[in-house]
Image 1: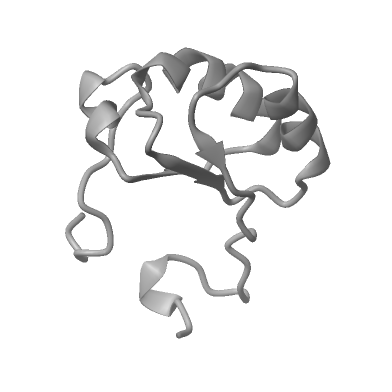
Image 2 (image 1 turned 60 degrees about the vertical axis):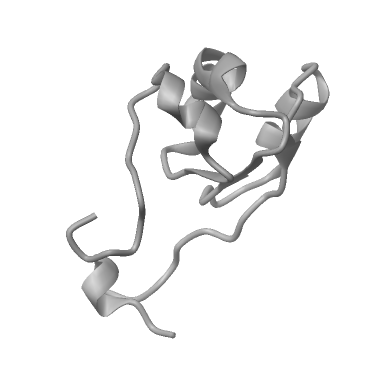
Amino acid sequence: MQLGIVDDIFDAGNPELSHSEIVVLALPVATLPQVLTEIASFIAPSSIVTDTGSVKKPILHFIQSQNFDFEFIGGHPIAGSEKFGPANAKT
């Protein structure tokens, strides 16, 4: 937030999440099903949910097995070099 690259950061279960147009899940792939289950009721049907996971098959299988009201679009992992953090992003 200090760099101005996101508007808000929410913990799981924050009701304010329902006002988000885009929800980016940047966490380990193995935790995505649990976190999605915890926050699904707070995500508006008009929201787009994406992730930064390195693989898509497990999360897509999980999402297809659920009855979520939101749209999920698998994202590309935030990959880079030996340098890390938003200050080292390449545009």
